[in-house]
Length: 448
Picture 1 (cartoon, rainbow, N blue to C red):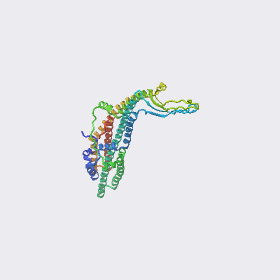
Picture 2: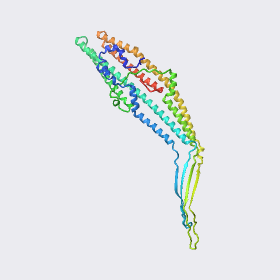
Picture 3: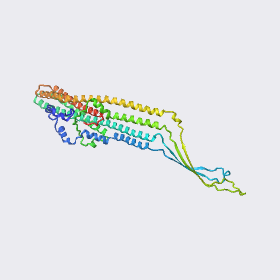
Picture 4: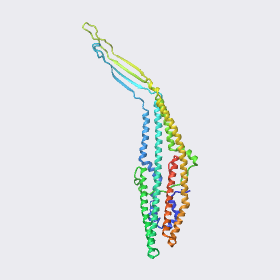
């Protein structure tokens, strides 16, 4: 079934309006659209450019790089400590004349216990997954903003085309009235009134042109670059394709709980909180430090006094090996504040996950209802409202030409037809937005 918000596909249904507005699809509109049809930018191409060039998304991706570096940091073991220096030096030489200076060298190594390193690595890895899920959630929101901007640009551009067509039709009425006044069929008041209406519509077209240009400029915001730099053709492909949800609301809810970004973020946050709690328990284990040292004392030669007796303490050189273990006394472990905090974070993450799942279920049902309503509104416009408005306008135009209707009646019919068509374009944009929101609520990449 052709999607009901296919804007370009509405033209065949507006045959009566085309007869009424002979210049509505002239060289300035339909001809230009045909000439640039091959260069139009589809939504999929625009969305791909947003993903590749968005500055905000690029900044978010740097957080993944940082988190990945944290895995390497978490695997670092305690550095060994090297000791070298003077072990002993006799400061009172009369007591021990010719005493030797003793040198020492040592190596201290701290051994981590309780699986601290493995717990740190696991916590860092789960933090990477949490960061990736968060960035993915940001990317989906960026897609939502991009889709809204694209739909609004399509609506503003199509509204401009419609208003330009109406202005052309009113200009034709003015020219016709000028001829009729010369022929004496109408008076100057009716001609002046038609000119006033044409001039008023000229102001509306000027505003519509500015709105369309603004909507086109706003496409640059999600891109991170000027839209015209990436897409010089500037024309948008607004022939959106049909989207049919894969199942009823119950099936969609089940799909969303598996793929939806905020659910995945909450799940990753819970996993990380559990890893952090396990790390907190592991950190309560004390780490012994092993010290290995070597001391060397050079030989002390004897010193003889005047009477030939030894007056110092001679000794042969010596090397000694020492091995000690330093074990902290875990008095600080009597308090359990860090454990309570870690377990509280796990509980909070569990509650958050449940809350997110409930919100996701409600969001899917709400967006599905909005999508169905928007689709029905567009269908009603396409199948009845537009055709009826065109028939009324065509009949009023024919009646005005025969003199059976006043200019005021014709202008009112023109306004009603324009308002109806602009409302139809807004319904198209609403359906495009509802479609993207439903797809994103299911964890899908948006398509139009």
